Length: 201
Image (cartoon, rainbow, N blue to C red):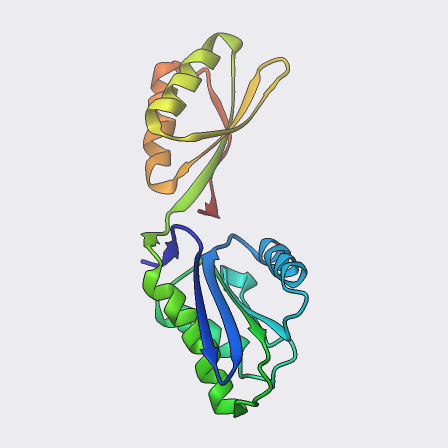
């Protein structure tokens, strides 16, 4: 079972006068990761490098940002893989201290920057989520909302036309039971447009 992280955790290392500011945090996709990296560049205009690694299904990435190829992004990504993580972004901001570390030294520095942050990070089991979309008569909307609350699900969107259209997000493991319960409660007056489309937490 892959894990993600509960929240962002930071680390800081000084190696031969270079400062390495590491961070690991939950991240859904590459576009979100790029925004975080862009934010770090703006926050640290004097930094020599902002290297990062992302494990997010088919959107994984390993970026050296000007460090010698394979000395930053790839080692950072390897640390995430070895921890059985998914949906996680690792970043390391480097302020150059004037002393070159060599390829081996860089690999160790970037690996340690991520590993140190992970030591303090709280891992949480990653749930596969389902997005459900249904139509139902106006008279049943209150009942639907009560069932969503009772299930601890999330109401993503509601629109009102000839019928109520609702989008709901919940753990995939609970979706089949939820659909069955609503079918029973509404005596079949609820229509499911899509059932169990998976997305990651």
